[in-house]
Length: 471
Image (tube, rainbow, N blue to C red):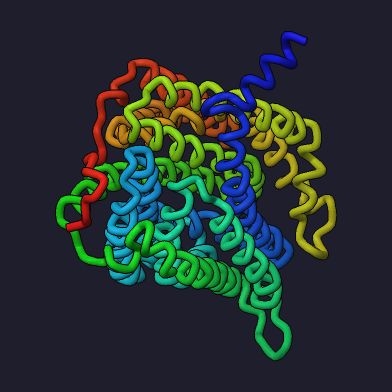
């Protein structure tokens, strides 16, 4: 009975399991839909050819590095929204969202300019020539099309920052419902369309982003929302708020960038061993995304609830959010990690291309099985990264997270792999061992950063008088 009573208190109490899941489950479902889009790309491309799936992962990581850097900035409207809600200043939410929209328009111009980076970037990676051509084709479609995703991130912050996450879930799920059939149609051809391979996968992804954006626009800009939050009247550029968005949002975007640069560079190093290890790593990371991305719904929920608590200057409430969210994250991660370890061969065989016999696929299976064991191992501690980094983001400690991730990538990933190469000890397995240790030690750094409580002194938003107007 004592355990049942404790669980009930944890569920129904302030910042309890129920409050976290109310915000986090729709976000997790939405992110699961986005993950399904990525997984579908890899799955269909793996049945198109080994070269296609080998090229898609580095190209996707390179484009997402640019996109997530900018969407981390535009999407930081969610934290500003959360803090204004906590501070009892809802009329400042509309102007905060509009600063994110202005950022997304500027970011779209940068995305267009990066189109010319594709060929020299993939030439620098040193992959085989025919792989480079496929990587370039994928990158040149997804990067300009990412402008839709930037705008969607800014608009989604209006809902997720207030804890009203179902509209974001609906938009994400609609994007997946459009993406999946278009993936098949564009990759393999049909209804008069040619088979476009990796280019088709990229076009289907962009179509999904566009649908998501088109759903959110009419949901945000209503007269009812304008009356409460000034989403229409607050369209003007506000220098002070824009600077605050840049101050906290740029490090947040760079945090995404650092993580993806690390993974992209790691994929490049694996790619130097040939197409088979690269394809196996790409499949492994696709499986990892199925575990990791839905859990990011908890990360976003923690950022929202910690942001609201810090808007109220309630540090004890913020700490309760983190403690309860850790329990939920561990309950999610443990069974999935076990499933990946137990069924690694069966999971890998899902990606065997049509017409390829078991003997030809055996090299991919051999190394991919070890990679999945590494993922199962580090996923056990990845819940700490997910929860503590979300809490630090919600409190505004984005610069601290940036420094932690930067130091971790350099000291725990780049230097060890460089040393292994110098000593001629680099193999696909030693590199994956380093990556596993990197994720585990990064989790320890996140715990230490939060426990020092420097985040509790950060003040992100002003507390205006109840009748304050944007200006």
